[in-house]
Image 1 (cartoon, rainbow, N blue to C red):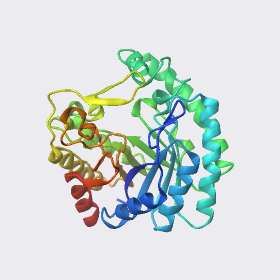
Image 2: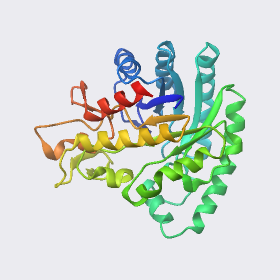
Image 3: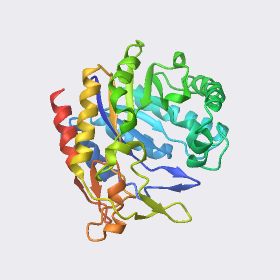
Image 4: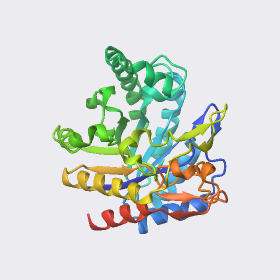
Length: 328
């Protein structure tokens, strides 16, 4: 495995609100240094909706010698808004690349379900539900997405001279001739566990470098079986903010650690070019050990648990990822 990585959250922007209100560059430097030195990563997938924050974090990562995957993450935007975001970010990414850093530009993540204009629906779950049981709609979505990606790639390449990828869900059927690296949000659940490794092998066999992004699960007993939905144990308020954990879920950090260890070993065995664990920390899902119903970290895919005062401690998964990356 060439790129041993993890996703780092710079703040997701939805309807003008950002998920990480405070962005302390000293904290970012500390975290990225830990990612390099303690987790043994040589690459980091910087995700978020603020171009300025992405550039700031990318400069720090580049100064530490990390390969930067510069990843604007549009949420609930129109195609025109997405394109504007991409062009802005492409210019910023090129400045960092031109200064000597290794930079890969990620032209979005799961655009068809995360944004407006590809599928009918008011939000992610509405769009996904409209797809279920209607396979004919997947072809329509793919056509719309690839038409947009062709425009987006042309606009990005006019500004950015490095390698380009897109983090897809497999049903999106991306035209990979547009990109230098094929990236897949490939999360294992119980339903696909028996054929998961073969699926990875078939992707690598296509000949273009393959990166696996977005894989992970939460730290509660049974989460690995439902990993794509392991965050759904949280209830939200009317504004969409997480407020409490549904009853009946037991913390099990070893389950998360085992899940990540198994997948990383599969990726190494199948000669995947890059892997990016999802994710380092999710600050808006704090760990509250004395309040089980408000211990939102139970549903977080982060490999560290973040407290309300924003200090963090490693979970068992931190050690698992560090051990695998140190020896491959």
